[in-house]
Image 1: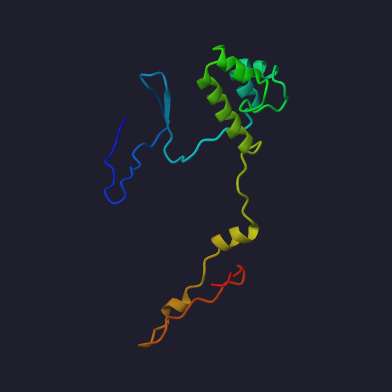
Image 2 (image 1 turned 180 degrees about the horizontal axis):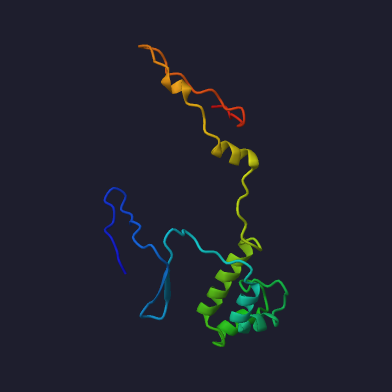
Length: 155
């Protein structure tokens, strides 16, 4: 894997890779190098999480409360399984982390919709005639006139 030095001015890394690559760590973990992507999310993975953590789903059926969070509720079958060694606490933490992330995500990835007005404003070149006017000594530089197709917000 190609690497570069860290920038001295802000102590951050530099973009080096130009393609996706999956690495297997010696401890068994997988590392995915995705240049240009800041975040990966989980969408529409309810069934996958339930299948991956089937033993936790099965244990949860034995909880006293149907909406048990497996944290503080009395008669929690999942916590009992952790307590008596039938369920690894790390596995429960992984399940809770994924379930929490899934609950915070929309059902489908949504792309921010841009209004037609905004798209038109971005594509329409702005007249630059005001730049060509000479500025007299001591005079304030002229400001461009607000565009008709955009709202001005108290600048």
